[in-house]
Amino acid sequence: MHIELRVEPDLPAGALASRTYDPNDDDVRSILADACEALEGHAEFLIAGFGQDRWPVDVRTDLAVFLEQLPDALRAVRSGEEAEIDLYEQGIERTLELQPQGAGYAVRCVSRTDWQPMPEVEAFDGQAIETMLLGVRDAFLQALARLAPELRAHPWIVEWQAAE
Image 1 (cartoon, rainbow, N blue to C red):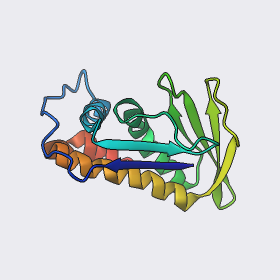
Image 2: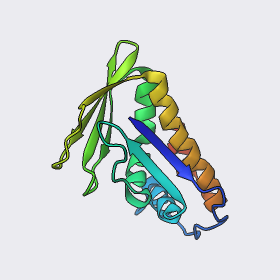
Image 3: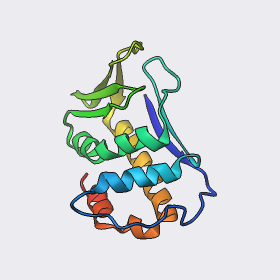
Image 4: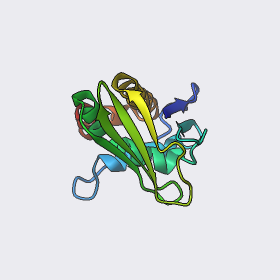
């Protein structure tokens, strides 16, 4: 398994138009979705493994879904607990189940489509998983700071980052 977010070095500054987020209608997912929409075409979200060199994931939708679950996954991995990342959007429909196993993790890929993982389970060092997850988080936060510096400091994003 490999998970990575690559962002173009010449990402246009201020490319994410500022808007007001309503606490009754919005939450951090709204910011994540807006940022991922702005990143589309300027970034590449990569997931590979379980017999497939490149999963059919995109920045606009699948990265937003992944980012929503990232703090919980990081917290679990750091604590040596079970975690799950559900890429539930139509087209990908896969779940990564992280199960502690000794000093590391057994990661099971469950597909809800005709595609079947081969192998179904891959073993990882817990530190390697944490490093991958932190890499995606840090790349996203750097991109957000360039896209919309005011959103990088938004309380919801600060809480999202600290939730780990």
